[in-house]
Length: 132
Image 1 (cartoon, rainbow, N blue to C red):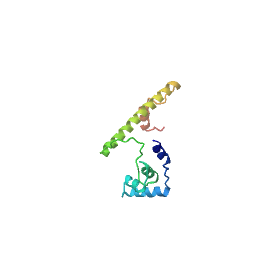
Image 2 (image 1 turned 90 degrees about the horizontal axis):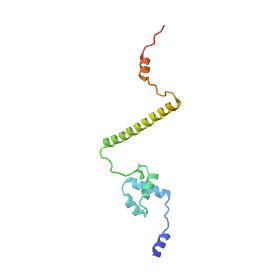
Image 3 (image 1 turned 90 degrees about the vertical axis):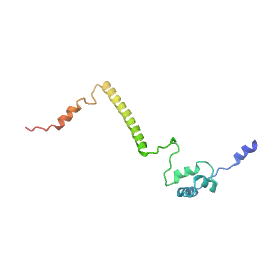
Image 4 (image 1 turned 30 degrees about the horizontal axis):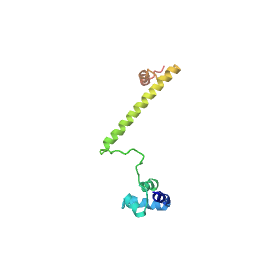
């Protein structure tokens, strides 16, 4: 058991130069080899090291691995609708919060922040001014 733990301690941490990382990323982005093949070819350890380098040095867009992974929707229109529905729910929650904030401010300060006669004001704006 001591030989296993001592073997782990003796394994040095590999440090790679920036030029090497960029070369690996360039080779990966060309699409000739996949991540696993490149790792084997150059003896790169770790499951996500190449992808981390790609996010840092690459020219292509790589999804952020911290985002929750789910099954992507096949229809882009359905995905767009889903996003817009979420934005609408968020906007409705903001509206409720602002209305509550305004009502609290009106009660505490004793002033009307929102005018109740908006329709009358709009009608007055459209009336022509009579000159004397």
